[in-house]
Image (cartoon, one colour):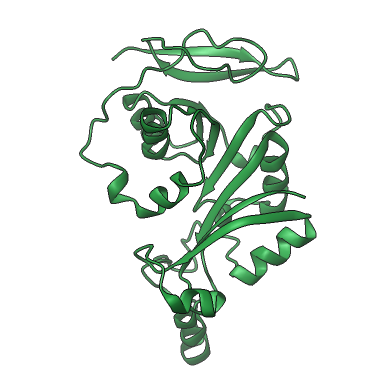
Amino acid sequence: MSIETTSIETTNNETTSIETSSKPVPHEALSDTTLTNNTTVSSPNSDENILSRPDLMLIERWIQPDARVLDLGCGNGLLLHHLMTHKNSHCYGLEINPNKITACLARGVSVIEQDLNAGLGNFRQNQFDTVIMSQTIQAVQYPASLLEEMLHIGRTGIVSFPNFGHWRIRLHLALGGRMPISESLPYEWHNTPNIHLCTLGDFENLCRQLRFRILDKHVVDIHYTSRPWHNLLPNVFGEFALYHITRN
């Protein structure tokens, strides 16, 4: 597979480079300027599929057919490839890890090498139907600012994150007096990429402050399975949360 780089002009008269495979298929442009070299939907180079990521299967339910989708921190492009092939979505990803960018290209996913901490100023208002930030918000420098930008360039947003208010974490802090290590938060305090951990209550309070409306949410365990007690006391029993949000 040969790789080409396409430059597009944004609304700020700046250029953004998009890495693509060399076989074009019709997609909507990322901006007002037509993207001439788009990606082709190709078979991934690994045996991984959407069934191995139940969190992504939950996110898929909130994506409408033919939607324009941007994934912030798209990883290896697994979700976007699935949306392209099963929902005819027009998908683009932002990623900073070179190995993950290469994996995106192997799947035929258009990807921009971009640091989320630099913001999303190279996109225009309502350019996307849905902007996704899956298990990324806790690792960015300014979560509130990024959320506002998400819902400036996207009509809706999908955000998922580990719940720091889970009862095991509370118990670990109360009895051990040290930062917890768990399956959902497997790092030591000094080497964790998670710099802004939050609870479900924290996130929902921030949504109120930013005047966002929560359209739907899933509260699940480490295996992304929902149990009756997750809805009873979500901030206590939920290990992960997924939110579908929009502006009021």
